[in-house]
Length: 332
Length: 293
Image 1: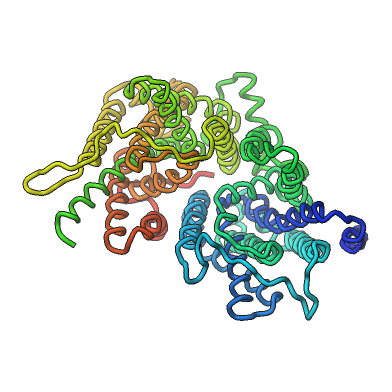
Image 2: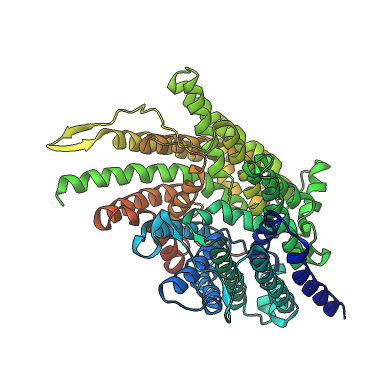
């Protein structure tokens, strides 16, 4: 019932906003934020639901963008097909990348993802015949769905918002399914999960692949709405920003990720014209919030209390102990 | 490809590898003790190097500026430990990792606010040029860098092997709780380890800056990958292993450049990380780490 109501509300908003908001600028800000929604949700699947940290989401974002742009430009593939292919490509890349680390120790995964992001940038800048290097791919074709060409910011809003809602809906469903439950089990206690027969490696791999697929889908949206793909859009800073959206918005909370995307992309973008200081110092400001959040509110802004159990609960207790200056602590 | 070119590449590789190792020591020691990937380390050592450069700009003698930069790195490492790690030391591993990253972002953002985002050049304190040795021309600067790095590692290992603090550190590496029960002041030792990591790291980062004649805010991030590849190759948690791993990585990169071109330089470190994870997860010289829950 509540779900149906939310769905109707979402459909109404998607239909109404392009007519109600006449300013192209505000629609652009909304579109950019909405493109980051699947990215933030993807990072949340990896970090919030499964307890791993990926610091290379921008690379998968980029893989999606390049895949989609190149497929439509070079091979003339229709956009919806290229969109799906972008997601699959990024997801497959993520799975291949994660496989060696997950068998050993998942905290090395975050290192590998950093290295992968740097490697992606090197390849994107150097493989001139495919990516045109730093010049990027200009004139990416517009999105076109069954003969309907997406031209204005308002039309882009309709598509981008629809995708964001579908991603949010699918992730919510997935998180409530046995797969999602096993992710949370792995996150909270890996040893116990294994003892209960959960296939830990497969679970982590699935979470990583889903997270990267969502990033790839967002990449396709970016490529065809900005109509330009350049390597500089996928720097490591971008990865860190995506990760921060997921964590600060709320771990294991899909609405939290949506909030995170709007707060961290929309707000600085909206203030850009008056004074760019928020964009310049965004990493530092949100970095400080990250530290504070880890100490006082590890579940993030909208994260459920349910999301903070054994996995995260220790943090604030540890702080209380520290403030009492008790020297007692155990091995990490 | 003649032998002289190959030899020069080898010396270059050893030099840059020793720099990776100096940076990697900080990561490796913290990981051994706290099972924490210290993502702020790269930014801390970048900040120290920037501070040294700024002091040189004010006319402070180079040696004093570098020493001060190292101290800035050490101090900043301790501050980061106090603010971002100690409150969450007992939390599950993801939590300190994220707060470490947040602290690193703050440090790099402050650095960008002070020094701007541009690439700056670093004074060439060790002259470039080459020296004739037994009929082969060898570049001077890499040899000097290698010598400095070897000296620092020798001092570090002497401290680790011979002093009370060194023994306490090795003890904490083995078992933190037991060490604490034996009366080792863990809450003083852990900041000290962060400080030493920052100190050696700034030294390594300054040599890195000199070698490439470039300092920029993001250099910490670049160093992170390389230093971790070095530490993992040698075996995380092994002081000498990190050094040997660094040298091997440097040589591997130099050879990859010599054989396939400069594009493959950064690929070499990623390939090495993946290969080590697949084939020998504990590194070449490491001992297996038992998983604790």
